[in-house]
Length: 265
Image 1 (tube, rainbow, N blue to C red):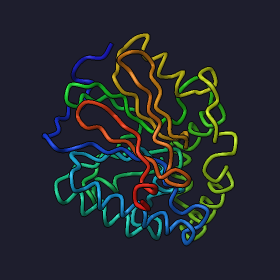
Image 2: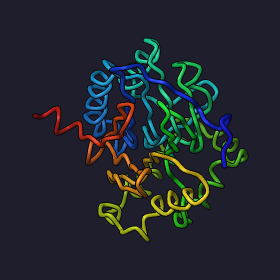
Image 3: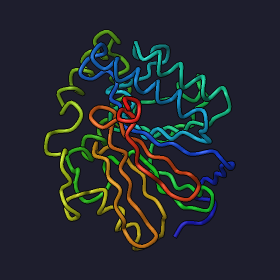
Image 4: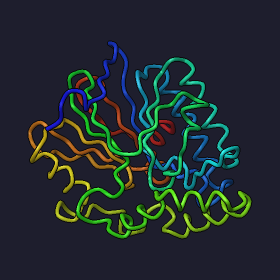
């Protein structure tokens, strides 16, 4: 069981909402091809900032990200600029690193005052309990990724990669990231059933020792909202490649929404 100090406590004012989005994979399959999706996401940020109390971005914003001491990947200035503008206006942004942008090291905090988490975090928001994270490596499966993450999060791996010139290192990493199933394989398009959905199984296991009203994750690339019991839900945010999906918490309940359908109607 958690103690109260394990939770980040947030209160949103009347009329304000909390927004959640994940898995943009900007830069995939190429910077030019992902730019239209970047512009759609910036449009979404422009709209939600009107009544946002907090914005949660749950990882894989970029298909690859690495911070050298004096260099960050080229591009993405529109989305980064919009995030900086929103943060500067006083709206908090919480960012969770994903498996494609796990190599963050202070840039978001220093340049945009954005709090970055690299593991799931517990929140109390308007007296509702949340467990929030990207979702990679959780549950009984994902074994290949769990092994890979141990390698990539090793300080020696980061040190060695840092010594590769950015022109070579970034290009190589972008190639490998894209080849490692662009976003998700075709097998991820459909719901696999309770027994084969790793994050669903993870949520059920957590509930055996601790209660949460909402589990909110990304990584899966499939919008899902599943009742775990009478008081708890698992929400997967989908992605901004195929679904342009996101979630809203209004102070009482969480709803999944689809921005592209809204903006075209």
